[in-house]
Image (cartoon, rainbow, N blue to C red):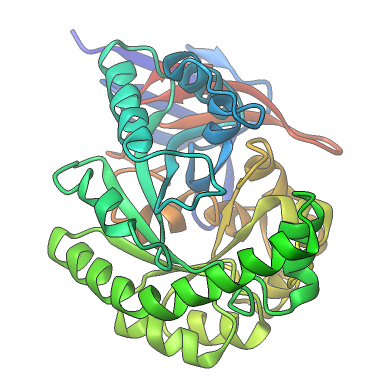
Length: 379
């Protein structure tokens, strides 16, 4: 006998409309959607029923694993804490970011990220996790050992996204030394001499390694069918470089020109949901709302605040002229799913995975009232 769940009296958010009706889950998939109320099943009380959120870029796990400088928490415990918050925020598919390429100041050692990935996969096998966890490898192309770190994942099927990053001063995110000084010198409490040494070392490493590592990693990803993301593109030259590497996701472009060009080239432009909720970038770069107003914002990421991924689409639907709630929610559901080739989720449609979120919002911050992954309630 098939397992069946029925929701009634719901505002069901489809790709291009919202209907008042009912939804049937059968054997973990969406079986039926129809207008009007069912005589059986769970009364959703007029709440929204939306597709489960798809998170492509979050550093949130890292804050649980290393909650203080030099502190390492039990990996399984850290993963479960991260997973619980993610699921309770309506995220049913999450790409956990793991760093590739070490620096003497980063504090993460060779093999540490591989051990974290092993712990995530063990937790999944033990049925500890609510959301589905996949891997996003954040490759610091200026680091001399980035390819060595990446080799730890050469046969890992959980790796579905790789971003190519360079955080050297004067590059991309940090186009001015004022930004870089605040982020690396002031916040870390470095002396003038220590900071000058830090900058010189980063510049030399970028000049020596970045171009060749981008090329090598892009070729490996193309051969393995892994989606490639650029990171913090600032210029038209950066966008052209990204096109040459087969990039499908442009993460956090730092200029309007780069965002426009990336979108026009067919890349999905990703910005932070916290940027939307706050109304500004925490690092002084462009505002996500400006890109939304221009029609060149495609994907949102919770980055460092999981609930922001649900909160931000409601903000955009209210504040951006001409943007509907289905269009805003597509930035956290169908578009990220399609960008990384996950065609079985991200939309409410018959035959797709029953990854669903029940949401109530009259004013202010939305409240998650239930989360289902493949028809199973997880939050």
